[in-house]
Length: 258
Ligand SMILES: N[C@@H](CCC[C@H](N)C(=O)O)C(=O)O
Image (tube, rainbow, N blue to C red):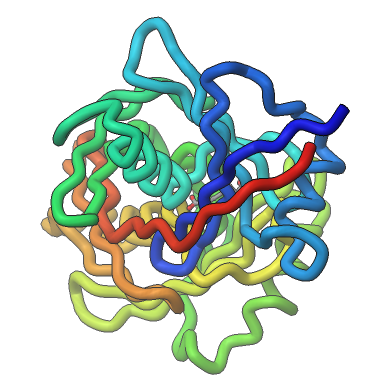
């Protein structure tokens, strides 16, 4: 017998997600089904699918899958969209905490804008002229002269599949410095295996690389799908109090048979 499931479609600066309230744990976590639901022609379409579940220590739990159907590491924009969804479900008023794969996150919502606290970052490694760091998901950050003209898919696919990174995979960010505290970032995402309109953990990683060894407390990040803002405190080579801020919007909802 087939069951119907209510789904919601959200986007955060154009990084889009299918979101399902799975507090009753009825959603079958089958990777082929999740891949099909994320398909833009045969399914609902999305860069990922997120389940909201109960958690004993926090307001809710985030379970994140990439568009390829595999459960993955932290998604910053997905986390912000899930916070907006939890607010829509009346799970909290202004401030919340939730558990994700990388630990406990604090967040706040105001006028459709969601501010999400990210994990601390202990180190930024070098790979040639580029940087490698983990902001909840692994990121490669390369500064380039002109991001609008850059071949993001070709170069991102090449780096993600290079011997150093092919086993675990990596998200690849190409960054243009616009001013001392603003950047334009385009990202090739692991698990989507394509460029997305925005990547929250990637925007965060790129901002931290810009901030490194400078007295900058916040960075404006332009992405293809809009604008994000990153705040952080720097202590030598590590960063704490990292916050990712931007819009999170419910686009439509519907029912699917599973
Ligand atoms: N879009 C995300 C990142 C999602 C995870 C990534 N694709 C991975 O598997 O590492 C974001 O907004 O952070």
